[in-house]
Length: 149
Image 1 (spheres, rainbow, N blue to C red):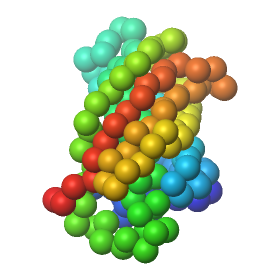
Image 2 (image 1 turned 90 degrees about the vertical axis):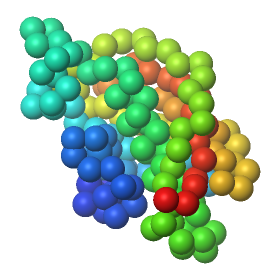
Image 3 (image 1 turned 135 degrees about the horizontal axis):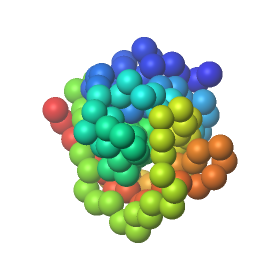
Image 4 (image 1 turned 135 degrees about the vertical axis):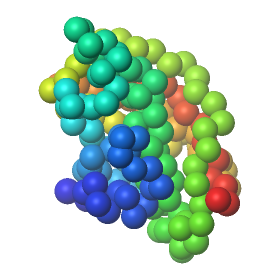
């Protein structure tokens, strides 16, 4: 275990019910991150998506990947000695090439794997993939920018 949910809350501004990363299991600053979210039937989203056929929304998977990418960006900045991340936030710039390959349901462990395509200053271009039981369920290229709060 690299970062548990309490430590992730020290890195990201997100909180329940919108904190979508439970644990970070691997991180190589400036290169890659791996983490996961345990998808539970008690998630508020399942009240409406869908009550008698619960499917975890694709936009939530993308957001979870982006949050993991935010941890990667902030910890990469820390590794470079840029420790002013407490006054920063990550903004989405674009989501490209998104594909949803299989549904995610309650009980699944959703594993996020992101690698850096390019980082220039405060802009991060990431390749994101999400897996359940080592099966690719979602992929996308994400661009984000680190900005002052």
